Picture 1 (cartoon, rainbow, N blue to C red):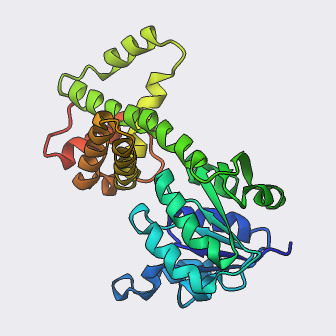
Picture 2 (cartoon, rainbow, N blue to C red; picture 1 turned 45 degrees about the vertical axis):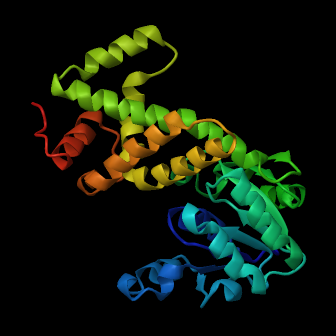
Length: 298
């Protein structure tokens, strides 16, 4: 394995993907702005070192000499983080932008990277990272996508080529999110209201009769867990979706509403009351009701 991999951003996605790659003996280096944040107290840098990941002192230092660069930061800071990497990028590198941002943002980032000689890859992560690790299903497009495919396969990654153009992979994920994250928001609103009258099982049974191909009982807990655990990030992604729809001249009625409902739950802080991975609908609803100032129903 001749790869040397850099991560810019070492949050949940970076750590989870990095853990799988590190287990194969691939040298990893990471930089995250929290490494320099006194409020973090060195905790995130410590996690990186525990995984055997070298800790860089800055963006350019991290990417210099890396064969693959993963950009895995927050949606709002992706362009700024890419710009900070430019002094360390050079020909022969693949710059893998895995952020959940708009196709236009990906195109703007690709335009920044291109003069360095590094090949930009628009990567869309199409499933939750945690269950899959570095083998999470992804779509790839852009000038470096074809070169990335065999190298991704060698690393045990699951990547499907979409287009040589930047933006199509991200567009698929973004417009799919209108449905997926919209369903999550609908489930939250439906189950929270139903819990006022303790009729959640009857509502779900009725849905199962109308849409028998879907396991509504399981989905209710799964959707609620996703929004409780990742509501803030999902709301940010949906705001990106809304902005993209507006650019296209489509009023983002549903995307805006989804972002608001996801952010509402994130702001409640119910996440702290339920361990990660718990998909028990009753337990999740009880935590949400407490956080919203409503007593759990018996």
